[in-house]
Length: 80
Image (cartoon, rainbow, N blue to C red; front, side, top):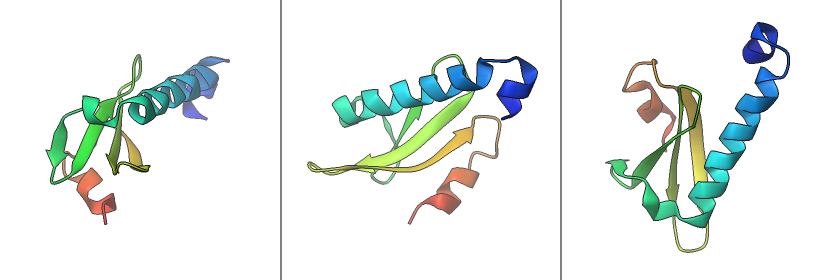
């Protein structure tokens, strides 16, 4: 909503970029580096956000999408 308030259509662009990032993760979950234990981080294009996830052979689990300026340890609080 914040992006949409900045410029009409920008919120939709943000969501499209997050969705594209998730599709890339699903296609190749091992492409991103492990950042903590088995958890990985993917960077959203054009926007300062990261997607934190882990995976097995059968599924990908997205834990959070966070702004990259947040505390580096904040995302760990959202992991099981």
